[in-house]
Length: 177
Image (cartoon, rainbow, N blue to C red; front, side, top):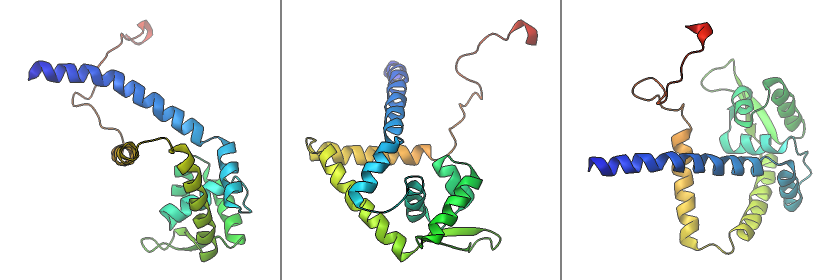
């Protein structure tokens, strides 16, 4: 049993590298501005591409504070704050007091904003059906299950190895000795 565990641990190193590469490819593809433009056009919504991920983020995770939203989309807080104000002026989101902390104002989706994200979801489904049209339904089920499991596992900070050190030590430069 011990030797079997070592084989599995050796193999997981290359799998992690391959998984990381696949995730980078997915993130790169999903972050292309053209993808959002296609989705916006397919949904038939009049929304600036820069506001699009914020509207979807508020609908999926809201009510949500601007700081958390900025962190989720990888943008500066001040930029996101201005963009949320724009979404508010369009009647797509509204700001409200946080139930947990009255000092914090959160963005929440409005009925008009929800109607817009419903159109986006329908467009995403149409595009997704084309992407998966040649896939076996069991493969799609497995992908969804495993992606959810992976997403849940990586939401938190990465675990620290039990030794507290990296598995590979590098010699210190002479200037630090």
